[in-house]
Image (tube, rainbow, N blue to C red):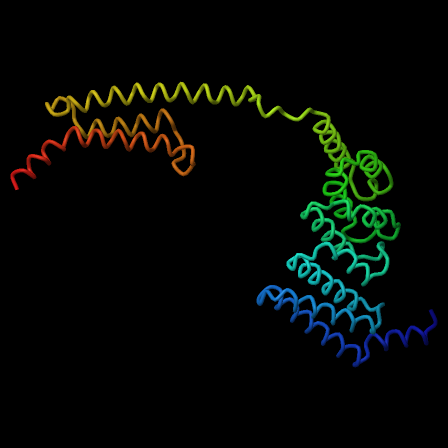
Length: 300
């Protein structure tokens, strides 16, 4: 580049008019973010992003600040479309802004992969991500490895595309994106997925051994608990003679519950055990104090 052309380029980048326009675009991006995050007006946020992108299209695209603003508008616009349940049009809208798949910034490519994976449509991103990863200049950009990892884990593995997954890991993309340890881990993930696909689906009519063992253990615990309840109830019947302290009985019931079951009372599975303990305490209370309460009532 000649010195005169470099000067013209520098002057265009630093011109007051461009600086003013970029300031306005930055303010518009802030407005879109506020509409998105604070006001949650997703349609208005998307419209603001669209207007910002139209304005940026008439500016110097070589300026790095324009590229950053463009990526910001695109990322906010993607989120707005997703919130509006118009996720199916996200990739086509992004391609309208960048024209070519390989020109999409790494951050936006990552967001696209995650979005379509989240909605259960990873195949939508297969062609675009493949083209992007095999574009040689992209191998040097920040985020290349993350795009490769997301493409492998959220697109190829869920789709069961073993051949392309192995080619990605063992080929040029894998060499540029992953370390040797990461490549081995990726191979293990692919092999594990293949093994899961080869396993026959479990028969819903047949319970696994672990579940049978669990039910057997629970049955044993129930029988032990019933025996303890009967024992404690017999002691309650004798409590009127003063030979058995109610306080000791209550403490024994609580300790038995804690030691025998050791369950989290917040879990739904613990409700049955808690209700049994409550029933026991009510029986103890009735056996010990109901006669005195009835006698006191009759006197009054």
